[in-house]
Image (cartoon, rainbow, N blue to C red):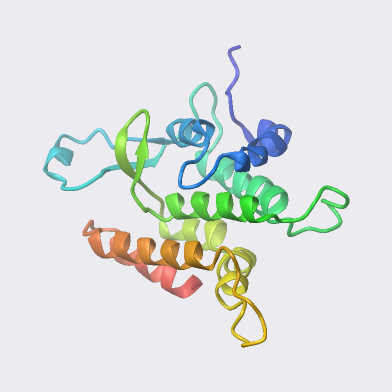
Length: 203
């Protein structure tokens, strides 16, 4: 009981269970994701934050509660094990016989990526807030070429040929990109410029 709830070791063990939360219908996501964000992120604690307009900002903790794990490393593993492997099935050999990347799984992956890109969401613990990640984490962990291709290019570009029907998740993918753009425009913090460049380079 004195060990960290979520660590690099436990992410691998809980990846399948986390992916099964795709059964919760959008626009909601399972409460476990809000709990995970509360575990990895925290307020800045700066007295000047009261002057900030809009949703409260939450940043990665210095270390995970109950342990000494680096939250950015845990988050990177969540993206790789849950989003890329279990939800998007990007490694056929590792996921052989375990099903395809269903619409529900892709929708959950879009919801996770959207929140990690700084789109405000309603936390049951914090109220309306937005998660703020550094440019390096955005480029190297969140907006990888495989995620961009699977969640945006393949979905939005599907049906460009008149003989094909458009992808069922196309409206959701486009809405996600619009919400990310609106969040970037609304962000006037000192570090917003580097995050904008990181997202622009990735997309």
